[in-house]
Length: 469
Image 1 (cartoon, rainbow, N blue to C red):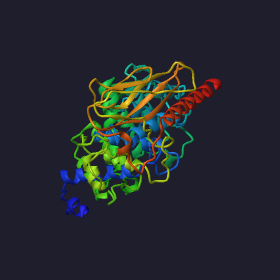
Image 2 (image 1 turned 135 degrees about the vertical axis):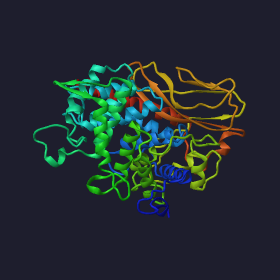
Image 3 (image 1 turned 90 degrees about the vertical axis):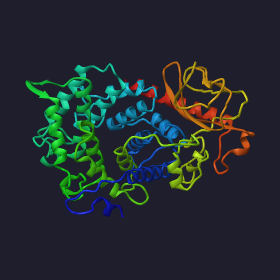
């Protein structure tokens, strides 16, 4: 039993072995692959699909997963949702930037969601809170290298630095005279996100400043925050939690914050071991994709072998009991929410090995002309090389068999955009003979119509926003 291995005896700590760490990663990823919804998202609670999907994408990328139906469907889902909360907008921006998408429009929307103090609250224009400001500013600093240091420091002065409690932590609600004492106490989650922001600024931007006559040195502020987190580590099981009760969410976030400041901190190995010991046999933590993804993010960054290049690592396939041939679509159906072309990845076209391929993507709605580009994933290996021209023409001669998954973006002349997950399936025989028989696929007209509908919906949303300004 893992608990016996990790908590061997009082006062003696037995760290998890590399085998246990790798097995925890494999089981967690397998659970995530199996529990993705048909529309490409993950969520355990209504209203948290952006947060969960973003966290899973980050966990995927930490394991080297940046292709395949699961990954591409998640990227397309995240690119097309319209989160209302600042938390959701920030996570959407952060994950899409890391996935390699053009995030200009998402950065602009998040920046416009700030308040008069250049900080952020739970919703656009709301009063400042440490956790929302930390998430938003972290995402913007990564997405916009030219983001103003003056604006960044204004946000810190408005929501972060004066709001640090005497304990060293930050609360969910920040400053305010009418905030109940219980709600104003420092908490692990807002403190962890705030430390991640301050460490980023301290190492890449500037190291301190003065707010309203008070001077702040970020290294001191950060260390006080770390000490607060350490005060929340349970001496018995070495997890982190409020009121002496450890939890996987708090432990994962505390781990990530401490590791960002000091990757060799003595508290990290016991905390990671707590997470491995509390993983369920199914591979999840608390049956929650958000907590599962965060726990996986505490594990070492790796690039897992994917022999078939379908986006499912070989170890995960073994755990799931499936073969190592290309079969990434097999995990999509069966959860009651997968409708090909509506909530599942689109099959764009079929190609035959060593035969010239030419396919034209189309769009309708919005304002022509349209510009097409690859956001993530990859077109088939080819000679000549596969390319997607700006007019939507995909061409090349495939030199490798298998499914090649990608996400493409359509942009109209008014800069309205839509993102669609696509696949080119290259076969040595006629393509229709080797489709997965249990997955309904779209005909060519279906892909065209779906692309047009997605683009039209983005145009309508953008126009509605413009009419309200």
